[in-house]
Image (cartoon, rainbow, N blue to C red; front, top):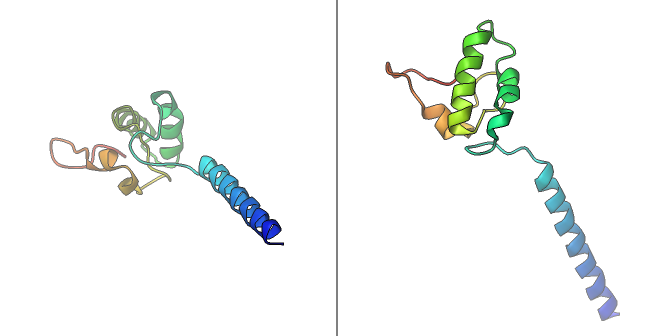
Length: 98
């Protein structure tokens, strides 16, 4: 009986390990290096889709994406998930990345 309980416990542990690994693969990762350079146009299209300044947003977003390899989630804000994107400033000290 003890062997059966130990085997059942081991099977439950292995099953939870497999489920955790599968969930980790499906989760979206943000931060520096989370985007490949070829993904920048599509990520920036999503990021800039709701602004009335689409062309400048796309220009600077893609520039920032190529340097930082990161585009924050959402259409505005959330820059804290990508330090490079958040901290890159213009000469005047304003944010460079949209």
